Length: 391
Image (cartoon, rainbow, N blue to C red; front, side):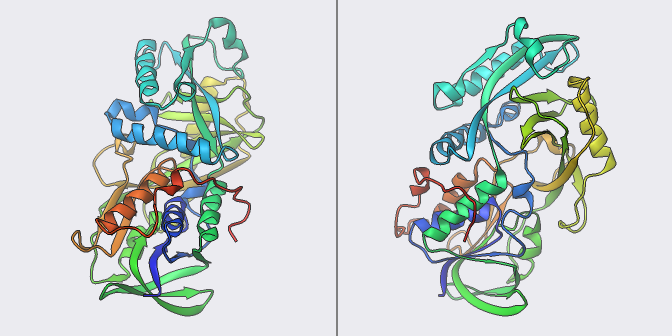
């Protein structure tokens, strides 16, 4: 075989697997049709967090894992992942009472791995006026806790940079055309800047994000998939910048969580959940999404400037189900060609925060009882670079 691992997709999960496999001593090839982090991995809410709201759906294992991963990233990439204060304002007309928020934060703190990142407090009324013009009318309480923020695209580049330093090969502008199962792995063809290439690999990883089903259908024989919904999330940027941290607010229209945060000299507000049909590459903020975010922002910062200076959309992959996307699981789902002798694995969904843990799971599921060449959990302690260039 030409490679041990061939990975389709240069988002955070694809580069995470590339780093994990390469640092463990395997021959790795990553193919990305556009550029690193060109899709969802540059259009997230830029948060490395446990997911406080997942406690309401009792996804304790997901929150615990995410908090553990947050702690790891704060250690291995302190220049990319920064701990910042989050504020939760509670009004007379919000759906959760102060005691409920306190209870959730208490459990969140218990699941965290250290005091600093798990601590929270209730702000005295005397400090409310300093919260970036937050609406005081009807305000009953403000809670402060800590989570982390990152540049998602830069983090993706830094992880790929680590993989390259360990010997991985990266091809951007490389589109998978076809692949077939052969003895001991897969043979696959791809176009690299217009030139046809062919290689073989023991393991083939489909980390194509919103394009995952398109990639799966190009492989033979038919491989296990998943019924999915593509859910568009839109963010907007506004003039000026909030300075006191990130605000975890409730949208008046449907009580969804919406964040208002500082971002590169501006204020970023997001996100939405809008079902997307059609080409995953054809996404754009809708007027309704922009109005929804402006409405939510002004409900909490009535004197703020809601003029949109920039907006963008990304797609989340969620398992198909009835009803709101907001309440669906964010657990990563894996599909393999043969559970007893796997050589293909598809990665569905997942969170930015959990990319490294997901890569560990990929290795465990594929290698099984096979002794790895080197410790593939080394990424728990391996420092990341600045992500300035993946080359």
